[in-house]
Amino acid sequence: MHLLKHVSRKSLSDIIITYDDGREVCGEMLHCVHCGFMWQVKPGSGKKRGFCQKCSGPTCGRTDCDTCIPLMKKLGY
Image 1 (tube, rainbow, N blue to C red):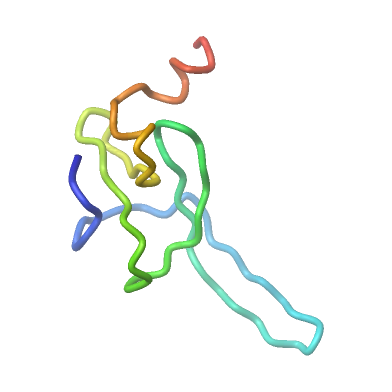
Image 2: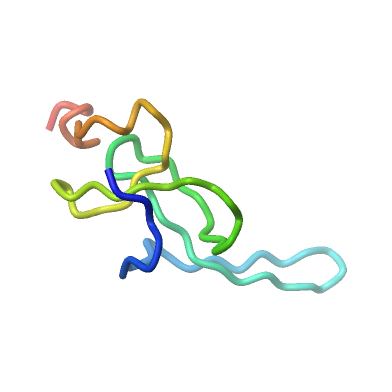
């Protein structure tokens, strides 16, 4: 497993959060190729994420996702 740092990646989607006071926060979302967990990309946050070479996608960094078992296989497809 490699840590996501200076790795080209494509975001799953973009998000815009609008607060009651009118502030808007824009960001990117990624999902783990092993468990499906989604998170907002925050460079420099200190979170340890990974990248699966076999699946060619990001992983959430949990120890359960260190082993390559693709989400679709877990779901029975």
